[in-house]
Image 1: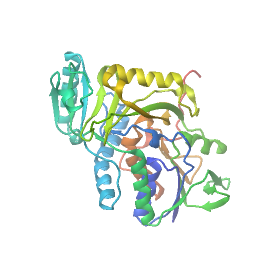
Image 2: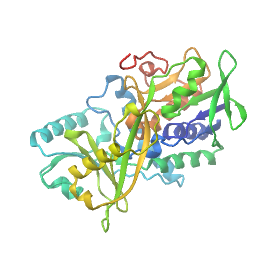
Image 3: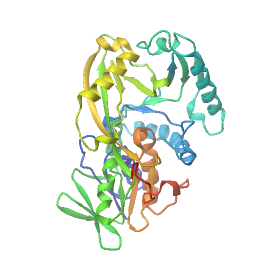
Amino acid sequence: MRVIVIGGGIVGASAAFHLAKRGVSTILVDRAHPGQATAAGAGIVFPWPFPWAAPQVWEFELRAADHYPALMAELAEDGEATGYEAVGGISVSADAATADQEFELVKELAAQRGFGGIGRVERLAPGEPAERFPLLPPSHQGVSMAGMARVDGRQVCDALRNAAEKRGLRYLQAEAELVGDGHRITGVRAGGQEYRADSVIVAAGAWSARLLAPFGVQIPVFPVRGQITHFALPERSTRDWPCVRIGERDYYMLAFPPNRIVAGATREPEAGFDYRVTGGGLQQVLTEAIDITPALAEATVLETRVGFRPGSRDSLPILGGVEPLPGVLVATGLGAEGLTFGPYQGAVAARLALGETAEIDLRPFRPDRLVAVPGS
């Protein structure tokens, strides 16, 4: 049996790894488009459902939480570096009532069966968040969750692909298009050659809809541009700093060793595939970052990355087969949560490509579901 995976982001790389690990003849085709979401993503891993998440995704996200550390451990045993570290996370606020409310909510969630990944939950008094993440104002208080982690999206994709190549994966850097015989998808054309396959997994992120469009299939995925800035703190070490969420703003910040801070990002669904750092986007990122953590005003600006998150029209993942077009599976639509839930989505896609059933109900995630476009 042969399976072809289109897309080398975290979903596609995970699918290729899980297939190769099982001895399946696998080809991974990746165009490496500028703006690939995995390469631009901040790197926060929040491996459990948000309390306000749609009920349909809870089982999916809980299983993803179990899958993540096991996969990272497997890659580490294989000698691959992923940048994955369970550094924990804190959600902070200047308001005591907001912090109290979030503490009770997360504590209740952690006590429920199946939420062991949250880890220990602590209420942090004013000043304690600043002890853990020294850029925060001393007036802030909040909640600590031990289960949060950070990962380098570029590193983890390389690790998955390298581990898969050790097991026989063929990797092609080329533009891909689907090939069909009028009844089903039969393979992929890439680099001027045609490759036949028993099944094709489309995991091309925000570009996935383009691959299916020639066959009259509409996929409810669209690009959401994000601009995210990386800073360096001279003569500071950020090795053990946790991930940070600013509760009132739904804003995230995290640190990577030796002294890097990642802050942002913008959410620009109207930008399409316009791959640019814009004046307005950069101003937004810098203004918010410095307003929240004034010490960043003296930090070195290293770079601003641009990524196109694969948003879905109803905010649900896109995962499964396409009823009118046998031979193809689609795995995308995770929006800003790709680095958290992408490895599990790729693993499920690999199982489906082999004709196996998923552990969860995938009906809400059907790629060919009809979803109204806002404003239509």
